[in-house]
Length: 397
Image (cartoon, rainbow, N blue to C red):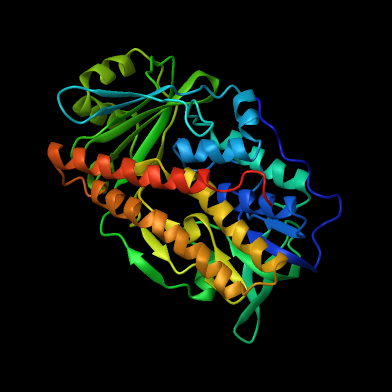
């Protein structure tokens, strides 16, 4: 597997200092935000508590809006160069007959892609480094620094175990659903989901595929996602008491319940040596800005992975937030108003998706309802694409 790898950390260790923006979390949302800000000349620090180039719990499918973002940022070519297979069709199975949809060229996108996170994340981090961002992995943010009610930086511990104080005009939390930034600011939930499904997945080799394949049966949903190195991510989603600890046996059983034809193909492929399992977590939307801070990605907005839409939304929100930050830096506009605009746009695009995905995660629908839910999901994604396509691709980003 070939990918653009991030440049090495600066030879000198991270020391206390001052930046325009500190981004906490160097995964998709954080790395993309840091890249966009650094490309416009902001002194940007990107930190993450994990080692560089590690995998992440993810089924990593990109929808059209996500592919559009990577193309606009001139990074899609690197995804393609890593031998990520183009996806030319999507098949939905929820009734008696599969529904096959061909991916038609639109908005500069003629195929979908599902790069492994060991491919996509390093591409984004490398792009941030190339843009001038300072990047440090194995650096843990332990607390926020404040002046009155305003966040003015972070306290962190370096990979060498040294404490540092890092100041910035703005701190961005891109550190996942258990975000330190969100917790330390007390960012309230503005919307909570009612349902959570568990997911287990693994990588089969030699599996005959037809692009993305989404199978929806109550208590037995599954998906087929072709990815790098001739492998295919196969996942199963159901209530936690059915998934339990996951594994290939559970995946095979759930796939067979959803589609005998897919189960037949799966039985002829080489199974993985191991699988990964997500026990489930209710979706949420948080208030995502305040004096000196903002949230992006799963830190501020998380929905059930049954939608396979998380990475796409992370890329979307990275651009929405970066544009708002650049507005207040470049035009001396009100930080509160600029960040409020970011959150309002995110919520306008996210709420329809959030509500539909939360209902799907219940696994309590029938064939007629899932058909309607998928139509609503498609409509929400179309609005998302329309908004992103209307942004000036040659502008400040």
